[in-house]
Every structure is written in structure tokens, then in C-alpha cells.
Length: 594
Image 1 (cartoon, rainbow, N blue to C red):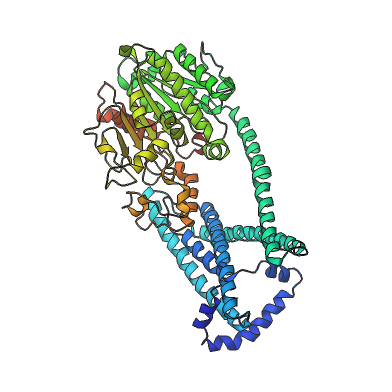
Image 2 (tube, rainbow, N blue to C red):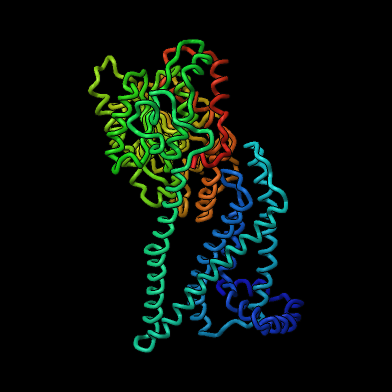
């Protein structure tokens, strides 16, 4: 009922409406007498302040974010944000009611005044929500035009309203159950302690039990169930995949590890890639079979054991005799971007080696929630083992040592270094694609960027070593770029690169800056709401067309050329053909990325 005094003042002169109130009240009383419907309506009745703030959140959730959303993700975002808004409004409502009762000395508002306020709010709220729904259709169409994605049908917006309403009611029911339990417990405590103490104590007890039930029971059970499910998936093999026939690939002839031990994503990576014959056809020059070394989780009990085995397998396959050696930290399931691997192998005509180890069965987002330290440990152990063996080679016969990571894997890749100075002292180059905001080196560079440099594409120490590139839509100047080169490739519309918990309560600098080429200029920040919008965007970020969001495709060819250009000069027609080859991977096959 918070805010009713102000609303009542605005409608005090609504005489026609006041004359009809007795009839309206009689009809409401009749509805409440229905055996099931009446108690349900009474139990789920809304708080006025919660309804007002929840409506604002509902409307804000329909505003544009980084990516166009499917109707079901929009419904989820809208339902959750409306619930959060309602909870915040209800809390403020309690505080305002306390003050209001003191001012009116306990006298309640007249029932007619309350009903008028609810009627005005219902009419105004419905009108505003409808306007935002129409605006959402326009904004989504603008976004989809920017990214060349099909627009949703009109019926989808009806689905959004229905599903988001059901989500809101579900959360509201849970809240009411917890509140009811707190009140019952409070009445029990009130037999022995003062009422205020009983109320606070009961609320703390119910909150504690609910928190323990989630963190101690349901959450571990869900993660355990997910781990078992993805562990089973890890044993599967895609149709058409078979053990390699070349000794340069793990699981092939003479390999220290078996084909079955590689895991699903490892088998996908090893089974793919160009052969020496295919490389010769493309380049017109003699080529080599690229080295692909991969160690699955089933091959050793510890990350240190996996890394040690990876070095021995890399040495067996001849990886330390190639021109370039790339240490890759994969994403959660062990996925290595085949586009990045293929681009490198074509550019170096097979005179390359890639090594990686698996550290989890879970997708990146689940791996982050369950045990986000594993990716750091894997990155540290793998690079440390490879670098130790690489550093014992004669300097004039060492391959170029490069680190690569995409998405969650980029975080683990960077964990092997204490800072930018340590990085450039140990590697010949680094390429990190779609790095999350908490990437340690990216975070340091962003916070210490040159004055006037934007957060979205920061410039660090005048671009001497570290540079950022937004892909084909924005050029990258390589003049004055010292070696070793470090490149962060991140699209302006990639939510993986810009998501952070701070979006709940503060507007980041990148949202205050001029937007990128594929971001709408009317993308605004709203407390709580923008956080859920960006969270939902991440779920579909890899499914966007190439050059947008988390789909980098053929841009990886240009990224490798900028960071580690091969000795051979490739013509532009050849590079364009190579981009087409790398783009041939299906960006809409979600299983390949997550």
C-alpha cells in the first residue's frame, strides 16, 4: 500500500469512479466467496508498491540489450526481473507503511481510496506495459536487422506475457510460502519473547533454512546430477568420427593415449582438421600433417598428471620440431575451437602443433559455478609443463610459443602468468578471443588503459604490446606494434566479454561510451534489469551470425595474421578462400561451443 497517499490525492476528484465503487466492491466480495478462487486470490494478492516497481521492471526488461532474444528467453528475463522489482517495491512498501501509520496515527485509508488507487494504477500500468511491448517489437526488429536475424512473430509476444506471468506467480507463491512459515514461527516464538524479537528471529530462521536447503542440498544435488549427465555425454562419439591414421594426432598410431580416453570434445578436435594432402592442394606447396595433441580427463588423476602426459605426447608427435607451438586452454567441456585451429594450420601449411588438456565435463557456465578454479589450475599446469620442456631446447631451434584461449578458456590461459611483463617474457604471442570480463590480464589492462581510451577497446601503453580488436566491423592498426604481440578479439555485441555482477548495481563505462557498430544507440542501463538481460544474451551469443556476439568464424584467420604472421605471404584471394573454409563450421550447432 506504499504510495497510496500520493495516488489518492491525484484521484480524489474522480467523482464518477467513486460513485461506482460500491458496485465494484460487491462484485469483488462475490468473487472472494468462490470456494477455491477466492482464497487463491486473497493469498496471491499483490502489494501496491511491489506492483508499481514490478511494472517498471517489467517494462525495462523489454528494452533492447546487446542481442536479439528468442521469445522464451525474453519471457524468462521479464518474469525474473518483474519478480525482483516486485520484491524491491514490497520492501520499500513496508518501510513507507511504517512511516505512514505514524503520520496517520494508525488510521487506515478508506477502502474507496485504496480501490481508486488500484484502478488508476491498473489502467496506467496496462497502458505503459502495452507501449513497451510495441516498443520491444520495434527494438528487436532493429537489432535483428543489424545482425541479419529473422524477426519473431506477433504471437511470440503473447507467449512472452503468459510465460513471464507464470514465472512471476511461481516466485510469488514461493515467497508467500516462506512468509507464511515465518509468521507461524513468529507466533510460536512470541509466547516467550517480545513480538519484535520473535518477528526478526523467525525471519532469520526461515531464511537460514531456505539458504541451507539450497546450498547444502539442492545445489550440490543439481551439480552432481549435471556432472554425471555430462560425464556420460563425454563418452559419446559423434557419427563419422574415427581414430586418426596419422602419428601426429593423439589417439593415432604410437600415441601414448587411447582414442576412447580423449572424451567427446577431444575426439571431435582430433578427428577434425586438414590433412597434409588437403593443405598441399590449398597452398600448392609441400605440406606436413599438423600436430594435434589432446589429453582427456580419463588419462590421469590430477591436472599435473594430465599436463605431464600432454608434454610427453607432444614430444612423441614431434610438436617441439614445428615452427609454431600453440598452448590452448579449452572451454568447460574440453572444447577447442576448430576454426581457430584450422586457420592456424592452413596459414602455416601444417608446420604447427597444438596442445590442450581437458579439465571438466561441464559446460563453461556450469564449470564456473561448480569449481571455477579448475580452469586456472589447468592453464597453469599445462603452460608450465610445456614451457619448462620448451625452454630446454636450443634457442635457435625452438618453435614460436603462443597461448590461445576462447571464452572461459581464455581465463585459464591467462592464469599461467603473473602479469603482462611475465607474459611477454615467456611467449612469442597471445591470442584471446571473447574473453570474459574477469580475465585477469584483460582486467588489469582495462583498469590501467591510456587516458581517453574507451573501456570497450582500451589502449594500453600506447599499444606497444597489447591491443584490442572488435573484428571486421572496425579496423585494427598494426603500426608500431612490438613483438611479442598480444591481441584481445572481442565484438562490441559479445555479452560474454561484458557480463559482470556489477551490472546489478552500477553502470559500466562501456555503456556510457559511443556504442559499437552492431549495438543499438538506445541500449540503456537499468539496475538489476540489465544484469539479467546480459545474462540471457550469453545463452544465445554463440548462435548469432558470424561477426557478431560470440561467433568469430573467419575473423580468426585475420587475428592469427596480426598476432603471428607466417613467413609465407598469402594473397588476398587465398585468404578469402581460407576465411570461407573456417566459416564453414555451423555456428548454430550449440553443442560445438558449449
